[in-house]
Amino acid sequence: MKAYVNEECILCGLCADTCPDVFELGEEKAEVIVDEVPEEQEECCREAAEGCPTDAIEIED
Image (cartoon, rainbow, N blue to C red):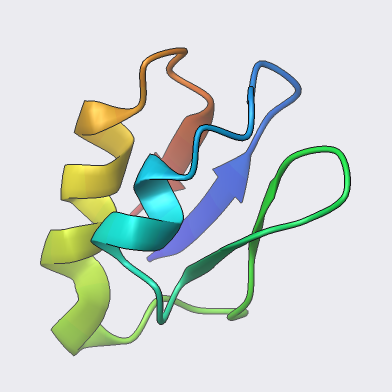
């Protein structure tokens, strides 16, 4: 699984709080800090995507 953050990100921090092993806040938007989402982090990554208020997180299975 891969995750991406698009330009709709408003730096609310929800993704980094929900799944800190995958996301962190960058200068202009949240950033994915792994090339591939580890299997044990997939559930929290999906939770972060579902909870994102601007739908800025995209997941590719």
